[in-house]
Length: 131
Image (cartoon, rainbow, N blue to C red; front, side, top):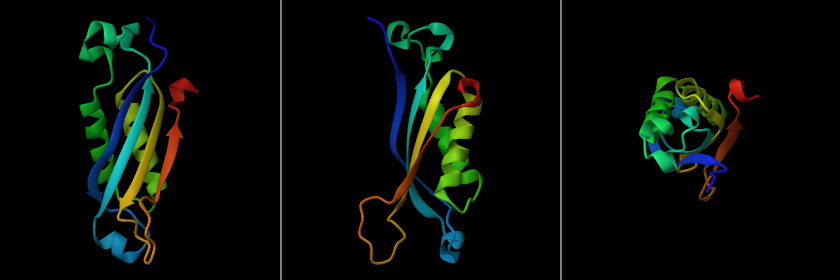
């Protein structure tokens, strides 16, 4: 059997960070939820579903570390900017990445009088080496 696509998925990783335009968003950290989907090619062409070797895949604990470092390292005004910082951090550390999708949302949404399950942003990036 041949593998067509390989992806690492992390859903709803929660952390607190300073992000936002409003004064109260700059003063106090907000709870964020981050999901990423990373499409990658195997290290050295080795299929980790066959080899069972961590060095043949993208280690999700490294991805979690990248997300947290990007989220806590800067204080951007926009979630859109934070998605880019996260994607760039992941792409710098890991070779073989074809695309990185990052979805960020604030918990709860910071809009008074609005009751929504989710208000957030989603961007998909292609590392320069795959353009």
